[in-house]
Length: 295
Image 1 (tube, one colour):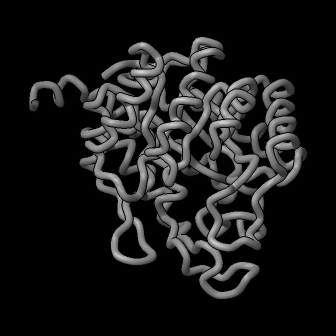
Image 2: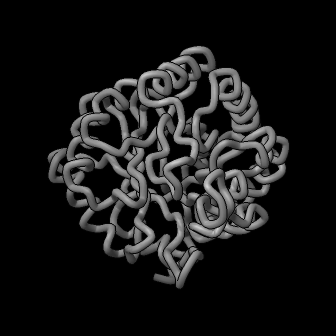
């Protein structure tokens, strides 16, 4: 498997390197909250030796209801991310939904994310690849809920076609649609995606969603419910299965979070989850030679 390096931060991802921790807020609510969450997660990550990237969205375009909170928008959102980046000396990641957003986002965010629902949008992939290539950044592409792990090869091929073969992409597992209002994670899929030559992360937050059955501002079935208690289960299992990074969302008061609170963890519980993830990662990478013998 190829190893990715975020050149601007000297962060290496994959193989036996430390776990990449992509953590933060689901959506930007205000500047002070972003700084609070980022500072706490940076402190924990430094203690545990994780490579940390602060995550938050400036716009949540894929919402169950038109009345759902979407965020501050690209202008104010990128300004907040720039503040977090400069004040706390942290790399940041944010997602885009339109090709026209790619260049602006990549100028601030060292890693640009493609949402799962949009992972097959060729124009979006091309624009994002061109933008991060120019800024020496990386792409984090979530596997669609409708795709088999091996079908991600076409996504990786699109990036390599635009980047002249340069490896810029991580794939992210976030669950597969299973019947109605449920998602399931296939842990055998981590190896399938890593075999494509890219690092793989787990979005344990969104993988516990119960899409469309929550109660939001617009009434029943206007929001996404979630099983918050399942986040640590999926995160630990994924790291044991070979995930190179974890994607986790926190909030000081998840029940008051403006977006996807039922799937979000309390900021006070961050260290409790991250410590065992470090131990699992170290145990897993220590067994790499044994796994090679079994193949």
